[in-house]
Image 1 (cartoon, rainbow, N blue to C red):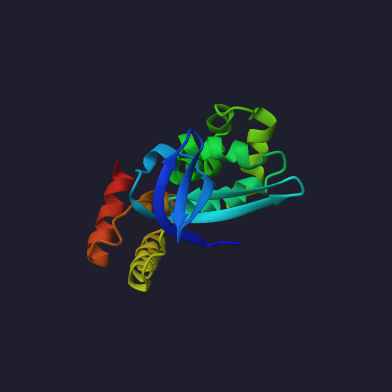
Image 2: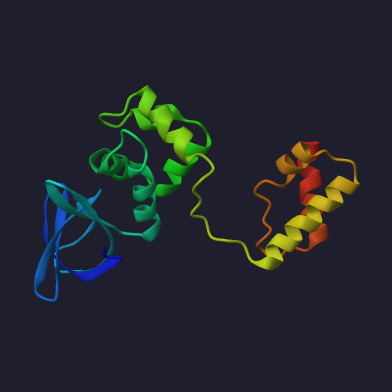
Length: 188
């Protein structure tokens, strides 16, 4: 298996590109081949799909996109072709949002994906994938301190979650400022 290939794009087709690496042209199926430019050097994160009657090489612009592709093809009834259609029209974050929000209609808009398969995708993947950057220990400590302070003021866990969602923990605010921001949300 190849983790990534670094080379120059020499051809762009409707569903694939040709990437020249050390004078060898690799035909790589990709969700959005027209995102690439002929003659430009790129790094493609790859996956080699092997069946008894074919070997295909799939390529992606980011590791997250490749990792999501690998999660999708493990869903019963969803193969590489259907997964490419999803990734061609939706970003990694849109797909994760649809999975985490039980948005079956998001996946039904892609060819070959009906209600049953859409629900299977959500069932198999919900809560199992997250490609967001990990917060620093300082950010996590500030978040914990704010949550403890709100708990000490008598707020319930559900209220605390609502009050602290999307607070700017990573923007050099003091804990007291973050608590004030959270309390302002409870008033609204």
